[in-house]
Image (cartoon, rainbow, N blue to C red; front, side, top):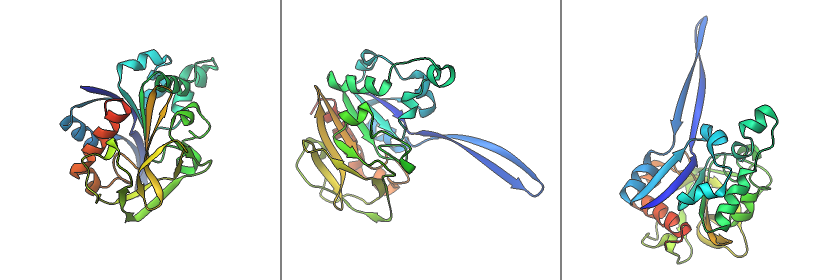
Length: 248
């Protein structure tokens, strides 16, 4: 069975409720993995989830600890969650750069996928901040230096633009998406699918490993129910994971 470490794709929300003179605060913890986990169960992919709030402390320093996984997926988690270990952030101590750890994992033959979102690639207000990091060296795309979100509330139709193992078994017509991060494929990378003229799925290699950039969300809001419940959703993700893992 293919074993994947998915880092991110979780969030905590805090709301203030006003009821006349009185008010109170409530908090909720959520993930965007319902459809993804169900699809991976059907396709025989074991997903280990490290939520975003745990990654700052728990993501490993040593790339050797990542070799138990065939592929790492970074989804909607900014670079700071890897850069600012509590020893550095709270106590001013030196710690290894864990974005370099990810790059080394790929160099040695690991697979890496970055999925789109408000805290992926460069992200909302540029806050995801991957552009000038070691992960940017490994990814098959070039990132903007500023906010790279493309909101498409009217819907945009994805299309595959080349034959590739990542799109094997998928039909020509795909359901609509509602947004994505704007990136540019590196010269030696393959643009496998597009939304309009922009890259949606880009595949490339780095060292002995393989990397994929998919510029839209794993789940809502950019990836609506029509896409996530489409039978091709699980096939696409299975294919990307297998290809990045060197199994296709």
